[in-house]
Structure formats: structure tokens, C-alpha cells
Image (tube, rainbow, N blue to C red):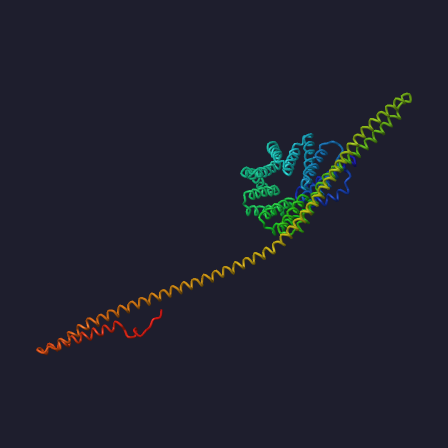
Length: 552
């Protein structure tokens, strides 16, 4: 065995040890050792696999740009020999590029890498990796709102894939898709299947978080807000415990949306501010963009238009950054292709020159003519290719310029709308103050009129009561006067008739002389009767009442 072969085997063994540490829970140890080994490794195979491990490490911690860098390093150092290991590394690298671009919000880039990975996997009969890319592509379709295409791919994974992870992920995503179709019962069927798989295997905590998130989404859609908040909170605890940073950001974004819709503004602001800080640290552009958008809406709801405008500008800047990243990457690829064509052109020209030197003198004229013809053909081909590339690059640059111009116009339009809003608000307040003053004066006038009417009612009531009392007094006086007249009439009649008669009888009886005793008795009785009638008649008209005078 040669020294070179021994060195290769040692490096391969060290790489295997790194992956063993990484997969057995000692990721940080593997990370430190990987950096140390990279300085010592000589073979492209060891360097490529080590860079791929570092890419996986940074992907787990949502350090997107770092993960993309190490993925590209792995591809740059992969073996040029078209063997199964090199192909597998390429397929895995494409998968990482797709995942990182999706986490960054560059969904079209993610779709491209998944498609390339699926094509390469199918070409080399890597069935598991093929369905892994199909599953990832379906997830990207969800982000691009191509829900029907995503559903078909997930159902394909469940039907044909034998990978438990892919089947689990498909159950979760189908639950999410049917939830978006408002078919919550069917959604919960798939989610319960996924949950049952997770509960059997404690290592599937990340998948469990996704299941709980989708269950929380169903609670929100059914209007069970308190239960949804509690469910999201449970998912967030698991994410923090297991360092699922990207899932933590997604959950925080969902909680912020719930608080915003419930008009719990202070809680929503706190959630989005915290989410924004973490999104900036992890380069999650889509989360940053949404956080700025929601903070703008919350500031506008609080009528803090200055802060809302600041967040609006930051939102537009992040959105431009995402668009520019995708277009700039396209231009960079065109430039690389252009440089490659230039190099190929140079190589072809050198080959022709070498061929020309080897020509026989006898055929020199024919060879020169042939050379010139080939050179012209090659030049024409290269010219056409260069023109096509230049046209594409110019077209892309013009599109970028148009996009920038549109964004500038949009910013100016936003400024104009803000100015109009401020003017309208100012005019509104200017009109509001005198209007309120007039309303206050009118209200006071109504109050005074009401009090005046109340006083008039009281005075009228007093007058009515006074008139009623006067009328009652008149009635009483008339009644007393009538009684007095009646008594006087009776007394007069008793005095004039009965008293006169009794007096006459008394006088006649006084002349009786034959029966003096009997006469005396009759006389005595009559005298008593006379006195009684006389007293009765006087009593019917009291002397005090005769002296009193009633004034009407």
C-alpha cells in the first residue's frame, strides 16, 4: 500500500468520525474538529465532505449564508470523477442549497435546486434522495402558492417513498394543505397520523413541532384563539429547547399575527420586535420583511405615522434586496457562462493554430483557407453566443433598472399619500375644534331652555294648585253660608210658629181657675216646653257665628 493510499484512508476515517460525532449529538465537537481538519486535509473528497458537514451544521442553526458558503465550497472540491459518492455529494449539496434559499425567501432559487437534484437523483437511481427532493419541491410549491401541485407531489411521496421521514413530512404538509382548503376534518386526519409517528420516536421533535403548528393553525381557522395561542406556545417551548431557530421564528410570526388580529397591539409589537431581531441575526429575509410590514401596520393603527413610514421604507428595502439577490445571481451565472465561452473560444483557436502548424506545405493554401473558414465559423458562433449572453444580461439589467424605478415611484407615491393624509388630518382637526365649540354652545343653550321650561312648568303647577285651593275655599264658604241660612230659617220658624202657639196655650191655661192644681201643672209643662224650644232655636244659630264675617 502506497503512502498516498494510506493518507487517503486516514482522511476518510477522520471524515467518518466527524459525521459520527455530528449524528450522535456532538455537533459542536464535530464543528470544531472539522475546522481543524480542513487545514490539514489534502484530498478533494475529504475537503468536500467536511465542508458539507459544516454546511449542515450552519443549516441546523439557521445561519443561512454560512451554510450556502460551505455548500458551494463542497461543490467546488468534489471529485471530478463521476462516481456514486461524488454524485451523492452533489445531490445532497443541491438539497442544502434549496433548503437555504427557501429559508431565505428565495423560493424560485429553491425550486431550481430541487429540480436539478431530483433530475440527478433519478439519473443515478438514488431513489431516497429523489423523493427527498420531490418532497422539498412540494414544500417550495406551497410557498409559491402552487397548492394543487404540492398536494400531488406529497401524495406521490406517501404512495411510493419508503423513507419514514419523507412520509411523516408529507402527512404534515397534506394536513396544512387541506387546512388551506378549509377541509379541517381531513386536515386533522393527516395531522393525527403524523403525530402518532412522532410520539413513537422521541428523535422526531422537529416534526412534532410542525404538527403542533398546523394544529394551532386549525384552531385559528376555527376561531378558537385562546387554544391556538396555547398550542403555539407549546410548539415554541419545544423549538427553544431543541434550538429549532427557524421554527421558532415561524411560530413567533404566527403568534404576532394572532395578536394583531385580536387588536392586542402591545403584545403584537413585542412579538414582532423580538422576531425581527432574531430574523436579522439568522439572515431570514422573508421573516424580516413580514416583521417590518406588521410593525408598520401596528404603528399606523396607533396613529404613529412617522414610525410606520420608517418601517415601510425598511420593508421596501428588504423586498428590493430579495428581488435583487435573485436577479444578480442570474446575471452572475450569465457572466460565468460568458467567461466559459471565451475560454472555450481561446482553446478552439489554439487547437486550430496547432493543427495549422502540422499541415504539410503542399496543402498549406488549402489548410490556411480551411483554417480561415473554421476561424470565421467559430468567431461567428462565439459572436452569436456572446451577443445572446450580452442581450440577456442587458435585458436583466434593464429589468432591474425598471424594478428600481418602480420602487422609487412607489416610495414617492407613499410619501405623497402620507403628505395627503397629514393635510387631511390637519384640516379635519381645524374643522373639528369650531364644530365642537358650536356643539358645546348649542348644548348649553338646550340645557338653559330645558331649565326654563322646567321652571315654567313648576310655576304653572303652583298656579293651578292655588286656583284649586281658592275654589275649594269658595265651595266651603258657600256650604257654610247655606248651612247657616238653613239653621236660621229653622230657628225662625220654630220661634215664630211653635213658640207663638205655646205662648197662646200658656196664656189660655193661665185663665183656668176651676182646677188650679191641674192648670198649674200644665202651665209648668208648657213653660218648660217653651224654654226648651227657645233654647233650641238659639242653639241653631250660635252667637259667635252671627258676629263673624266671612270675606269672599
